[in-house]
Image 1 (spheres, rainbow over the protein chains, first blue to last red):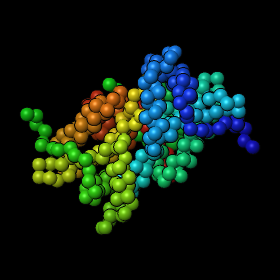
Image 2 (cartoon, each protein chain N blue to C red):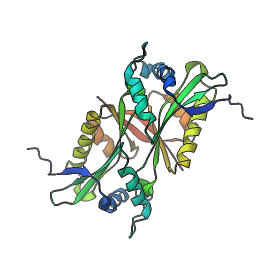
Image 3 (tube, rainbow over the protein chains, first blue to last red):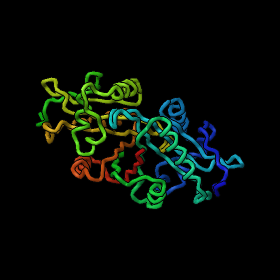
Image 4 (cartoon, rainbow over the protein chains, first blue to last red):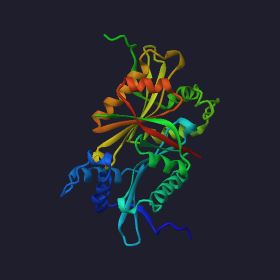
Length: 156
Length: 156
């Protein structure tokens, strides 16, 4: 047995949307971007429906032994011509509930995503992490990711 | 009239795969990753078929006035919960034929992709560019992209 807590990674359901958005908003960068209101803006549910029926995308949550959702991650597996026509995996929106950090939950989710990418025939997993998220960069480096690229963004 | 050459951006077809792979391979990083052989390995055509039927993905080429393919770009528009359920756009595999660089072709392709992302309701366009591609980073900065993130990759 490893020391990791008993976490289950499962596909997100519509009734997880609220807790996922709360995790996205509970963050210095996310706070300004989300609208954590009751009821939650319909746009989140519409986006959930769109991604849920998308065969490239898996939005998953980490659920603890008590059934609480304590993390989320979105994995996209994208076909492309480069690297001899290998698909690429893109990891996005990785979050762990504030109170449950440093317990290996993020690691389990990312390792799940990497295994899924490998099983899906990808040769490359990529992600963008904000320049200010130095802890995240260290975390991904520990899991074997290289800071090989500049992640460039344009916001409207 | 701007000084840009008369370039048409159009969806890639199966018979463009060879010239696209040649552009991907004609690059210090791409050379080691591609197999530019005659006939072209079947894996490239299989990947083309997969991406061509993917509703999230547009692989486009830039065609000049003589009908020659002189550039390529892949655009993915991906739903997600963050930023109030806005989709995100990912630009990948941007290449311009060596002899046709510095003629505004890359700019036209990227501007096309940005316009397409905007029309598709995205609030964010993102891309990864290798740390060594300093010219590319300057090019994207000129088009309004910020070097806001670290692009991390894991290769199998």
